[in-house]
Length: 97
Image (cartoon, rainbow, N blue to C red; front, side, top):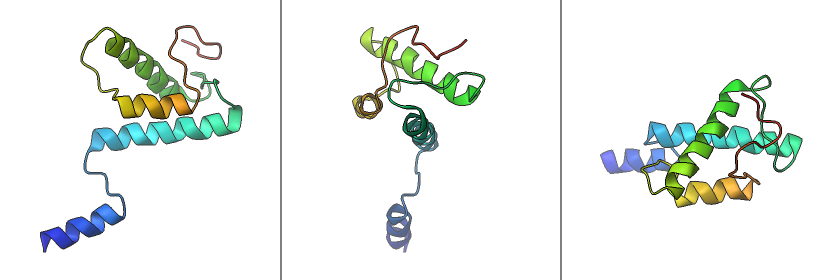
């Protein structure tokens, strides 16, 4: 039945929402970067341009959240980023344009 198939997919953590799955993949990449390079360090555009852009996007989403604007950055995502030592401020060393 559909319910049984859905339960099996849920068991293997099937991504029902592509946007959420993409965010989680980038978060995992950032998590690996932090493990290799330490807290508070962020990928340069030379080392990993796509992750660098994602980090900048998270900063923009956070600014929108603080301004009361619509954003896809949820409180749960914010907590996850903060656990990695993700700092929401402009001009962190190591972030290149």
